[in-house]
Length: 55
Image (cartoon, rainbow, N blue to C red):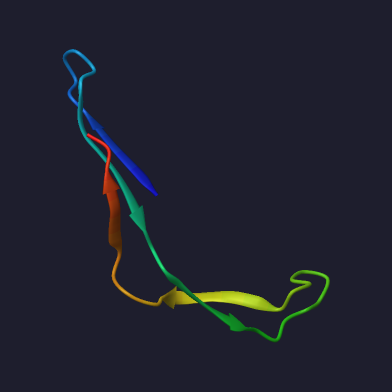
């Protein structure tokens, strides 16, 4: 995810950061027509981490 924060008055970038959110994926028994891979997002696998500040 990339978060860009700007000032309203002159559109100056105040904060520009890239974040990573690690997800936990699990097998899920559902109709193969609706979900051919049988996978689902179960939640976050850890805390979000900042990759690198851009500004």
